[in-house]
Amino acid sequence: MDLLDKKYLLAPGPVPVPPKALLAMAQPVIHHRLPEFSAVLETIRADLKYLFQTRNDVFFFASSGTGAMEACVVNLFSPGDKVIVVRGGKFGERWGELAETYGLEPVYIDVQWGLPVQVEVVKEVLTTHPKAKGLLMQAHETSTGVKHPVAEIAALTRHTETLLVVDAISALGVYPLPMDELGIDVMVAGSQKSLALPPGLSFVALSDRAWKRVEEAKLPRYYFDLRKEKKALGRSTTAYTPAVSLLFGLSAILKRLREVGLETLFAHYARLSGACRAGIEALGLELFSQAPCEALTIVKVPEGVDGLQLMKLMREKYHVTMAGGQAKLKGKVVRIAHLGYQSPLDVVLALSTLEMALSELGYKLPLGAGVAAAQKYFLQEV
Ligand SMILES: *Cc1c(COP(=O)(O)O)cnc(C)c1O
Image (cartoon, rainbow, N blue to C red; front, side, top):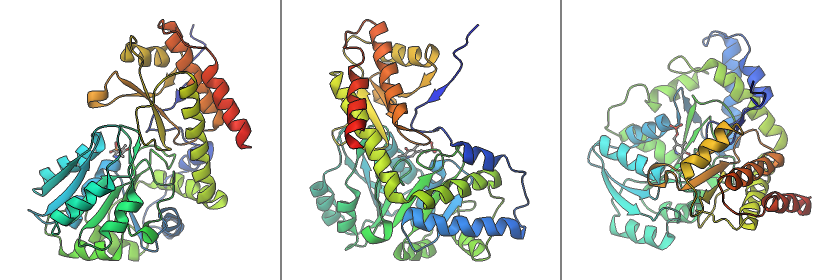
C-alpha cells in the first residue's frame, strides 16, 4: 500500500491554491446576471486595478493565458501590421505564432535561451522599424526562467508609436510592474500562475492609447472582442457567461492581496527565489537563466544524469511535481516554481527532493548542502 500519496505541486502552473480560495470556489453557483454577482464583479474590478497598478479597467476571459494573448493580437492590430516580437523561449515563440496566424508581419528579435533581451538591441530595432504597431514580449519567460528588462523597454516605447504588449502571465504580482507608471500599454495575466487559482481565467489591461487601437483595429474577433466586454463592464456584467466559481476564488485571492499588500508579495517571491538559488549554488549545480526571475528557479540537469528519469523519480517516488524543460530544453533542466500557495519550507522541500533524487541516480553531491544554504538564507533574512 502506498501511504505516501501526499502530493506536492511545484510547477510553474498550475500551482497550489490556498484553502480560502478553494472554499470560496465551493460556494453554490449563482446566476451571473443577478445583482449579487454584479456586486462581486465590482469588487473584483477595483481590486484588479490595484493588482495591475492601473487606473484603467482590467478585462477577463474564461480561457487559459494564451486566450488573453490572442485577445491582444485580434483587438490591437490589422492584417499586415508590423510587430516586433522578442523571441527567447517557448512563450516568445507563441507571440510569433499568434502574429503569423493572424497575418501580421513579425520582426523577430531572437534571443539565446537563458539570456535576457538587450535593451540596446530593442532600441535599434525600434529605430529601424518606426512603423511597428506593437512590441510583444514576456516579463518572465517561464520556459527559460529569464526576466526581461520591461521597465527599460517601456521607457523606449512610450516615446514611439509602438505599443508595448507584455505577457506577464508568470510575473504579475511577483515583482513590481506598475503598468501606468512605467507606460506599459497592455499587460496579460492568467489565473493558474501568480494568482494562485486553478487554470481557466485570463486577464488583459490596456492603456488609453492602446484602447484607441482597439477601436481602429481591423482583425476579426468575436468571443475575445474587448469592445463588447467594455460595454458589458460598464453595466457591471460580462458579455458572455463568466467563470462564476473561479471569480469567487479570484475575489478571495484579491481580498487577501489587499490585506497583505503588493510589496509584501514581491518581498515573499524575492525571498523564496533567493533561497532556492542559494541552495542550488551550494550543491554545485548550475542555474539555466543568466537573469533569473523570481517566479521560478531553473536548474541544469548535471552531466551524466538522465533528466527525464530524474523528473519521473521525483514525481513517482516522492510525489513532487516540478516541471521539466520545454521544447529544446526537454530533459535538460528542472523548473522549480515558487508560484502560488507556497512558503519558505516548500523551497526546502524542493531542494531536499532534488538532492535525494540526484543521489539515487548516482550523482555525487553533498546531501543536505542545498537545504542548509536555503535555511541559512531564510534565517539571515529575518
Ligand atoms: C503559462 C504561460 C503562458 C501560457 O499560458 P496558458 O495558460 O498555458 O495558456 C504564456 N506565457 C507565459 C509567460 C506563461 O508562463
